[in-house]
Image 1 (cartoon, rainbow, N blue to C red):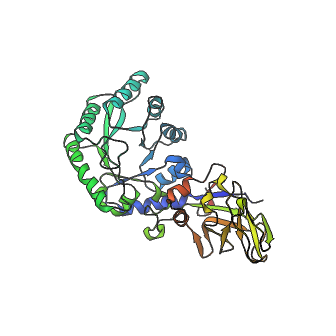
Image 2 (tube, one colour):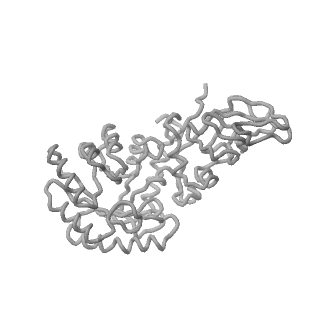
Image 3 (tube, rainbow, N blue to C red):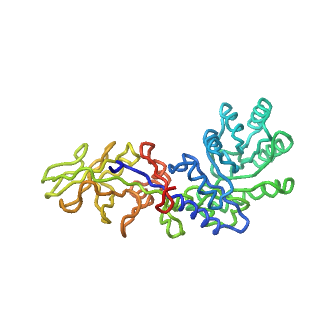
Length: 376
């Protein structure tokens, strides 16, 4: 019996995407695969292992618990926690041997407190300069240098890196260049005193478009999953979408003129037609904004979604009863024959980005892992 909805995740494509990205960056630049938010909805641990197999040597997450999950799975690669870590979360991060991001003396003091209490090995710290993202990090160069000096002066800590975060590498090369110009004095001064630090700034977009930003390490997220960081066409960059989201036709019924489908009667049949019901909805992460606003693939053909997306079902106009049958596979993200629906296409329909489409696939949808069709 078909699963009502399933997300098939091709781990071989993850490995190939990582290899493609490494080929695009400057020789000697390492790659950090960002596997936060449960690997952008794909599964953090399976994706992390596939990324490492493809040549990544670092991993990055947003929270202490995400780092702990990777360690519990036996992953030993360096794990950078890029997000803010509260006092309560610090012991979890330290116990997971995570590398942390600092930009204030207070945070350094808190890390030292946890290390003293737990007798942990030296904790690696990356100092963040805010060059234009406007979120985490200090905007003041002198303050960032002070934090770096505090870290380097403590035998319980290791000054491991210097970093920044681009705000618009996907769409504004001039602002990215301005951010690089603000970052370079920080890099120059730190490398003058501590030449072994790892310098990193580039996200997926910058890895593909801004060679000057590559430094020692690039932090790639969406491109690892085969998404175009410019939200256009992943195939233009040689990337392979990793996730396919599928369901099946659960029912087919006639809709006579004036009959409707879905909550609110947002679609009413004009001429006589036929409707297929597909058991997937916003409870599975398929957004309500797709109501009357996208297509699905059945038998290699596109069919319009009609009516309101509900929590558990959508309805599709199929025009004639012979077009589809109960049990037919339905592709919401992915390829069927010569047709393909990408996360980028769906994102553009509802004025969002591909990140949100794949991250939004809910935990109710089972992930099935494979390598080019073979069980993973």
